[in-house]
Amino acid sequence: MIFLSKNATAVLDASAKYLRCLGFFFGILGILNVCRMVTQGLGYSGRAIFSGVMEMIGRVIVSVGFVGTMGYTAICFADQAAWIAASCYIGPTCIWCIRRSIKLLEGKQA
Image (tube, rainbow, N blue to C red; front, side, top):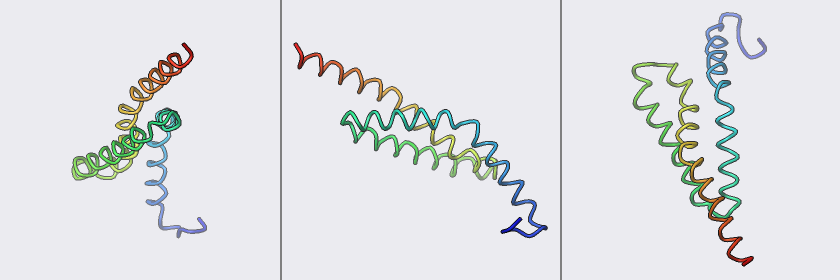
């Protein structure tokens, strides 16, 4: 209660709701970050950057499409929707990049 008055309990309730919604999706965020870094490390930085574009598209869709009807709950899930959108792109892309890199390495060794 250092930064809030005793009457501002609604802020604490909203913060708790946001953190509860966020906590269930940290596994997806971990997958997203690992896949993005692997893809970028293998030299496919354009594809890794595009996953960031997918995140932005996910946030825009939630903000424009759902905040008006669902209110603060939609705001609480905007980050998670962005992570899921980016993971749906970067996961298969990462696997493709790994397989392509393995084929290129096998070709150089032969």
